[in-house]
Length: 191
Image (cartoon, rainbow, N blue to C red):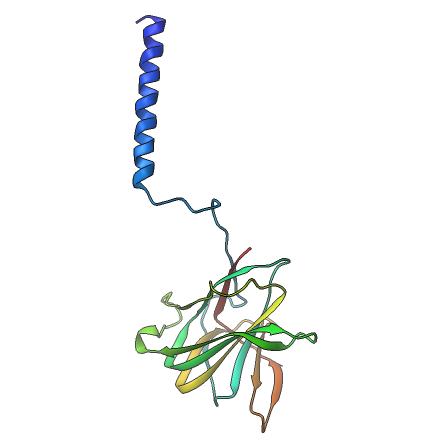
């Protein structure tokens, strides 16, 4: 085969290949605008459930402090593992000048059924969508307390320094107290 003919065959093969790639591209899922995305999954536990966190009263709150990296971050999701069903209220708080939970940025109420319950090792998480929140920066607090029934969430034995309890009862308030166990909460954000 002469050189000119080999060049024509190679061009034709390249054109067929490009046409095939174009057809495959049209049939595939649309590309994400702006290219690949990155997520930051923040957690302070070791992913080993060791026992539940129960709520002795409606005013008792388990709180986790999340220090976001520098800059604004778009909230995506909040995940937690449920040990027993019931009704929970989840508050996402800003921070005060004294680095305590400030005003609630978002309040979520969740009725947890038997289908939401995890054994702490099965990979079952309850997921709350946070995509409609404005970007967050600095310190964010996530507080969980019961509003009905006897719900509980899984915790690990990690002493993170980021997990606290408090009592919001106006008659018997209790400030933030550090705990020796860390709730299995995941805050997912995008830089």
